[in-house]
Amino acid sequence: MTRSELVIDLGAIRRNVRTLRRALGRAELWAVVKADGYGHGAAEVGGAALAEGAATLCVATVPEGLALRTELGNARILVLGPSASGEIAEARDAGLELVVIDGEVPEGIRVHLKLDTGMGRWGLSELTAPGREVVGLMSHLASADCDPTFTTHQIDRFAQATEPFSQLTRHLANSAGALRFPMSRFDAARCGIALYGLSPFGGDPAADGLEPALRWRSQLAQVKRLEPGESTGYGRRYVARRPTWIGIVPVGYADGFRRDLTGTTVHVGGQARRVVGTVSMDAFAVELESRLPVGTPVTLLGPGVLAEAHARVAGTISYELVTGINRSAARTRRTFRDA
Image 1 (tube, rainbow, N blue to C red):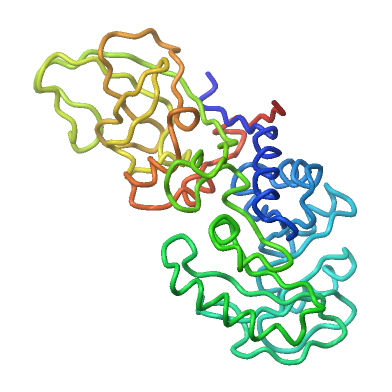
Image 2 (cartoon, rainbow, N blue to C red):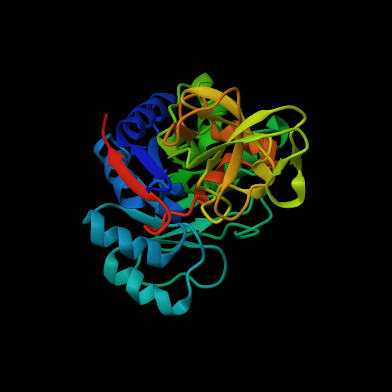
C-alpha cells in the first residue's frame, strides 16, 4: 500500500509566477526555493519559475545553492542566509551570490549587503558605502502580512538608506509586500510562499489569484464501527456517543500530519470529514457518516482542503505545515505534473 502521495503541479507554479510578475510590474521576481522549495522540490519549482520569467533563485544555505547549480546550470542563485568561511570558496567556484550581514565582504564573489530595518535578525545596523563586490542592497519585512504601519516604516528607512546607492539592485519585498505594498517592490521582490499558491496572509489564496500547487493524498486503510463508549486512539480522546463509523488513514505525525491537527477537516471520497482522536505517529482517524470501502481516497491537502485552514487548527502557519511533510521515499511518494 502507498501510504500517501504528494503531487506537485508545476503548472500551478507557473501560473503563480505570472500572477506575481503582474503584481510586480517592472520589478523582477526572485523565486525563493529554500528548504527544498518549501517541500515542493527546489529544482523542479526553480526550473518552472525560471521558464516563466523569474530572474533569480534564492536559497538559505550554500549547500542548497550548490545542489541547485548542479541541477539548473547557469541560473542566478542567491544564498540568503549567513555563510561559513569555509563555504565561500565553494560558493565562488559555483558562481553563487552571497548575502553579507556583518564583517568583511569576501573578494571575488558577488554580494548583497543586508540592512536590518526592523526584523531584528540578520543584517547590518547601518549601511556602509558598498565596495566593488557589492551588486545588491536588501532588507527583510517583518510584518507585511499584519502591520501596515511598521511595514511602511521599514520601507521608508530602506529607501532613505539606499537612495545614495540606487545604481545597485535594491530588494526588500517578500510575498506579502509584493502583493500589498507597491512601494516595497524597488528593483526586485523575493517571493516564497505565494509562489507555491499559499497565502502569506493566512486566508484563501484565491483572494490574491494564487493557486496551491501541492496535493497530499492517502486512502482509508481500515474502516470500523465504534459502539457507544468505545474509543479510537491514544488517551481515548474520542469516545463514541452513538454507533459511529470511523476510517483509519495511514499517515501520522512522522509523515508531517501533526499531532495538533485533531479537529481539522480532510476530504474522504470528496466529502469533508473531521479528524478525531489523537493523531499518532503513523495514523489518524476520521469520523464517517456511513461505512465506506477500504481504499476510499483521502485528500489531506488539495482542492477544498487548504493548508491555511489546517494551520488555524494547529495554531501555526502554512509554511511550517508544508515544509514539515516527510518526503522520504519510505514514507511518501512525490510526483510532479505540469497541467
